[in-house]
Image (cartoon, rainbow, N blue to C red; front, side):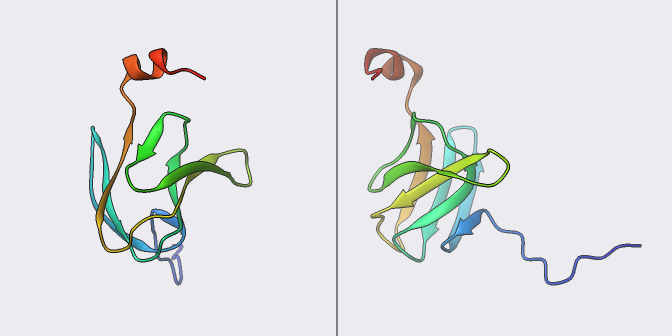
Length: 91
């Protein structure tokens, strides 16, 4: 009855790239540009080696993962810092 026109679902709110795999240990992806906002909830304990991570507040109160200073074309992984590390290095 209803049809979406020009719908291009993506995990990228800003920037572009490719999601390679989403598994329980994290999300593997490649970026086409050094800065992007991913449609995954941001928490202070998420990290991507080789990138600076921060939160990007969007309308409605959600905060997504914003990445900057990332290498392009390289396989990256969004993952959580282990719980024990979070406790020991709490700021």
